[in-house]
Length: 203
View (spheres, rainbow, N blue to C red):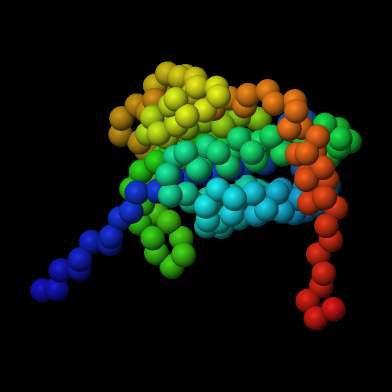
């Protein structure tokens, strides 16, 4: 009888992002939906390397499954990502504004064929589902790593019963500090990024 060795597990910060239709409406325009998903993808992929993150995959609804080495780079990415989305929305027509949210957890995961699996992934997905539009929610393991290292401390929201998770999980909200002096540079960067056009292969 051959006993297979357990798959090696690694400690990673897993983050799920999600995108909803503008102003909480259902998607009615497939072209608009595709445009906003592509814009969101460019934002995420532009910011991700700055925080040492890895794109595991893009999800069907325009969100992402992302992986980071630790909680602090995951939260640093989330803060810059949300600030970039906010800056974009301030100059976008109301029907083209992005409604996004994210959830993150630091835990053990299994890597297989470029994907990630395990309770750490499930927890991050459940935490993201709790987040309100425009917010970033994290687990206690992530909050502990960033405590005292952010301008605005994590806000404890209490313990939550999560589907298919055995014990209640403490959830925290990450707030974005107001930094008006950086807004001009950020808005300029966002405008430059979103006005880029893809060059067809072979052209």
